[in-house]
Length: 169
Image (tube, rainbow, N blue to C red; front, side, top):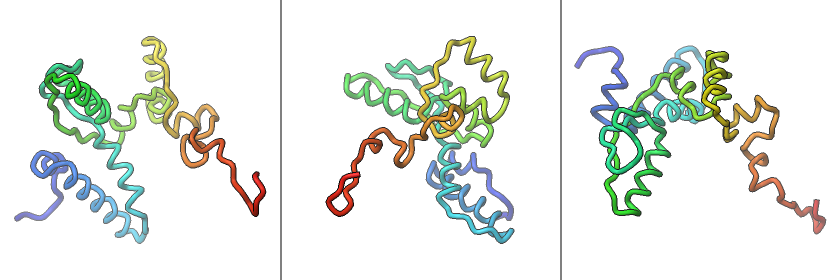
Protein backbone atom coordinates (compact mmCIF):
# COMPACT_ATOMS: atom_id res chain seq x y z
CA UNK A 1 0.00 0.00 0.00
CA UNK A 2 1.00 3.63 -0.06
CA UNK A 3 1.61 5.99 2.81
CA UNK A 4 -0.37 9.13 3.47
CA UNK A 5 -3.88 10.13 4.30
CA UNK A 6 -6.91 8.37 2.92
CA UNK A 7 -9.71 10.28 1.24
CA UNK A 8 -12.74 10.15 3.61
CA UNK A 9 -15.09 10.30 0.60
CA UNK A 10 -13.49 7.12 -0.75
CA UNK A 11 -13.82 5.43 2.64
CA UNK A 12 -17.50 6.41 2.72
CA UNK A 13 -18.13 5.08 -0.78
CA UNK A 14 -16.25 1.80 -0.22
CA UNK A 15 -16.56 0.98 3.49
CA UNK A 16 -19.59 2.94 4.64
CA UNK A 17 -20.61 5.42 7.30
CA UNK A 18 -19.19 3.74 10.42
CA UNK A 19 -15.73 3.22 8.91
CA UNK A 20 -15.65 6.85 7.76
CA UNK A 21 -16.69 8.11 11.18
CA UNK A 22 -14.04 5.97 12.90
CA UNK A 23 -11.36 7.19 10.49
CA UNK A 24 -12.23 10.87 10.94
CA UNK A 25 -12.34 10.59 14.74
CA UNK A 26 -8.98 8.77 14.81
CA UNK A 27 -7.36 11.35 12.53
CA UNK A 28 -8.58 14.35 14.52
CA UNK A 29 -7.63 12.75 17.85
CA UNK A 30 -4.20 11.95 16.39
CA UNK A 31 -3.62 15.62 15.60
CA UNK A 32 -4.60 16.68 19.12
CA UNK A 33 -2.50 13.95 20.75
CA UNK A 34 0.54 14.88 18.65
CA UNK A 35 0.28 18.35 20.21
CA UNK A 36 0.02 16.88 23.71
CA UNK A 37 -3.68 17.66 24.08
CA UNK A 38 -5.92 14.99 25.59
CA UNK A 39 -9.52 15.22 24.41
CA UNK A 40 -12.39 12.82 24.95
CA UNK A 41 -13.52 10.98 21.80
CA UNK A 42 -17.15 11.99 22.32
CA UNK A 43 -16.44 15.65 21.52
CA UNK A 44 -15.01 14.78 18.12
CA UNK A 45 -17.74 12.17 17.55
CA UNK A 46 -20.41 14.87 17.92
CA UNK A 47 -18.77 17.00 15.21
CA UNK A 48 -18.28 14.01 12.88
CA UNK A 49 -21.91 12.98 13.39
CA UNK A 50 -23.03 16.45 12.30
CA UNK A 51 -20.80 16.21 9.22
CA UNK A 52 -22.54 12.97 8.20
CA UNK A 53 -26.19 13.72 8.92
CA UNK A 54 -27.25 14.34 5.30
CA UNK A 55 -28.43 11.95 2.57
CA UNK A 56 -28.40 12.63 -1.20
CA UNK A 57 -31.54 11.22 -2.82
CA UNK A 58 -30.86 8.80 -5.72
CA UNK A 59 -34.41 7.53 -6.35
CA UNK A 60 -37.41 9.36 -4.91
CA UNK A 61 -39.84 6.44 -4.92
CA UNK A 62 -43.28 7.69 -3.86
CA UNK A 63 -41.90 10.27 -1.42
CA UNK A 64 -41.95 14.05 -1.86
CA UNK A 65 -38.14 14.11 -2.06
CA UNK A 66 -36.45 14.76 -5.40
CA UNK A 67 -33.44 12.98 -6.94
CA UNK A 68 -30.26 14.93 -6.18
CA UNK A 69 -31.84 16.65 -3.18
CA UNK A 70 -29.82 16.57 0.04
CA UNK A 71 -31.97 15.92 3.12
CA UNK A 72 -31.42 15.25 6.80
CA UNK A 73 -31.17 11.58 7.79
CA UNK A 74 -34.16 11.94 10.15
CA UNK A 75 -36.35 13.40 7.37
CA UNK A 76 -35.23 10.64 4.99
CA UNK A 77 -36.07 7.94 7.55
CA UNK A 78 -39.42 9.52 8.49
CA UNK A 79 -40.61 9.80 4.89
CA UNK A 80 -39.52 6.24 4.13
CA UNK A 81 -41.31 4.94 7.24
CA UNK A 82 -44.49 6.70 6.05
CA UNK A 83 -44.12 5.01 2.65
CA UNK A 84 -43.65 1.58 4.28
CA UNK A 85 -46.79 2.15 6.40
CA UNK A 86 -48.74 3.02 3.23
CA UNK A 87 -47.27 0.11 1.21
CA UNK A 88 -45.69 2.56 -1.23
CA UNK A 89 -42.23 2.69 -2.78
CA UNK A 90 -39.50 4.11 -0.52
CA UNK A 91 -36.77 6.49 -1.64
CA UNK A 92 -33.15 5.48 -2.02
CA UNK A 93 -30.15 7.62 -1.20
CA UNK A 94 -26.56 7.60 -0.07
CA UNK A 95 -24.84 9.38 2.83
CA UNK A 96 -23.01 12.62 2.14
CA UNK A 97 -19.91 13.80 4.00
CA UNK A 98 -20.02 17.58 4.50
CA UNK A 99 -17.15 19.76 5.66
CA UNK A 100 -17.50 21.52 9.00
CA UNK A 101 -18.53 24.82 7.40
CA UNK A 102 -21.12 23.24 5.08
CA UNK A 103 -22.46 21.08 7.93
CA UNK A 104 -22.92 24.15 10.14
CA UNK A 105 -24.70 26.06 7.39
CA UNK A 106 -26.89 23.08 6.36
CA UNK A 107 -29.04 23.25 9.48
CA UNK A 108 -32.81 23.74 9.67
CA UNK A 109 -32.24 26.63 12.09
CA UNK A 110 -31.50 29.89 10.30
CA UNK A 111 -30.38 31.45 13.60
CA UNK A 112 -27.79 28.73 14.09
CA UNK A 113 -26.54 29.09 10.51
CA UNK A 114 -26.43 32.89 10.78
CA UNK A 115 -24.39 32.72 13.97
CA UNK A 116 -21.73 30.68 12.21
CA UNK A 117 -21.05 32.49 8.95
CA UNK A 118 -22.60 34.84 6.38
CA UNK A 119 -24.93 36.37 8.98
CA UNK A 120 -26.52 39.02 6.76
CA UNK A 121 -27.10 36.64 3.84
CA UNK A 122 -28.63 33.94 6.08
CA UNK A 123 -30.95 36.35 7.91
CA UNK A 124 -31.99 38.09 4.67
CA UNK A 125 -32.69 34.75 2.99
CA UNK A 126 -34.74 33.61 6.00
CA UNK A 127 -36.76 36.85 6.01
CA UNK A 128 -37.47 36.70 2.27
CA UNK A 129 -38.63 33.08 2.54
CA UNK A 130 -40.69 33.79 5.68
CA UNK A 131 -38.86 31.10 7.62
CA UNK A 132 -39.72 30.32 11.24
CA UNK A 133 -36.97 28.92 13.46
CA UNK A 134 -38.24 26.02 15.61
CA UNK A 135 -35.61 26.82 18.31
CA UNK A 136 -34.82 23.15 18.92
CA UNK A 137 -31.02 23.33 19.20
CA UNK A 138 -28.62 24.61 21.82
CA UNK A 139 -27.12 27.43 19.80
CA UNK A 140 -30.33 29.16 18.78
CA UNK A 141 -31.68 29.03 22.35
CA UNK A 142 -28.46 30.58 23.69
CA UNK A 143 -28.71 33.34 21.05
CA UNK A 144 -32.20 34.37 22.16
CA UNK A 145 -31.49 33.85 25.87
CA UNK A 146 -33.81 30.90 26.44
CA UNK A 147 -33.09 27.85 28.57
CA UNK A 148 -31.17 25.33 26.45
CA UNK A 149 -32.91 22.03 25.64
CA UNK A 150 -30.43 19.90 27.59
CA UNK A 151 -30.39 18.47 31.11
CA UNK A 152 -32.84 20.29 33.37
CA UNK A 153 -33.59 22.71 30.53
CA UNK A 154 -35.52 20.01 28.68
CA UNK A 155 -39.28 20.44 29.01
CA UNK A 156 -39.83 16.94 30.39
CA UNK A 157 -37.51 17.68 33.35
CA UNK A 158 -38.65 21.21 34.27
CA UNK A 159 -41.40 20.27 36.74
CA UNK A 160 -39.67 17.46 38.61
CA UNK A 161 -40.01 17.61 42.40
CA UNK A 162 -37.07 16.37 44.46
CA UNK A 163 -37.52 14.87 47.93
CA UNK A 164 -34.90 15.53 50.59
CA UNK A 165 -35.46 13.63 53.86
CA UNK A 166 -39.24 13.52 53.35
CA UNK A 167 -39.39 17.21 52.33
CA UNK A 168 -40.43 18.19 48.81
CA UNK A 169 -38.55 21.10 47.25
